[in-house]
Structure formats: structure tokens, C-alpha cells
Image (tube, rainbow, N blue to C red):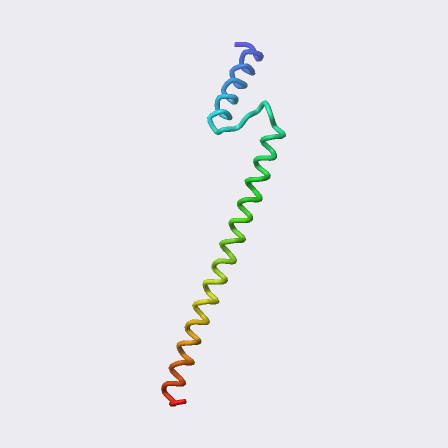
Length: 78
């Protein structure tokens, strides 16, 4: 087996592997744009989850403080 035959086999297997992963080696600019979009989408989702958790925690704390305040008002009769 010559070096050129080995290169051809490796190139064919890489093409098959990339195709199996949904990657197109013929258009690298488009692939890079897709990966940039995917990165930005992941960051957006992570930011949204962070904000949702912050809002949920704020609602829980507000509810608990409201319950404590209502209990204090009920206990002291005002």
C-alpha cells in the first residue's frame, strides 16, 4: 500500500464520518456560519434559563415574605 492509497482511504473515511455527523466539507463557510449560530443559540438559551431561575427565586422569596408578613399581621391583630 502506497502513501497515496492510504491518503485516499483516510480521506474517504473522513468524508463518510463527516457526512454521518451532518457536516459538509464542500462548504466550510456555511458550516462555520452554522456553528456560530449554534454557539449564539446556546448562549441565548443559557441566558434565558439564568433569568428564568432568577425570576422564579424572586417570586418564591416574595411569596414567603408575604406569608410571613401576613402571619405577623394576623398574630398581632393589626
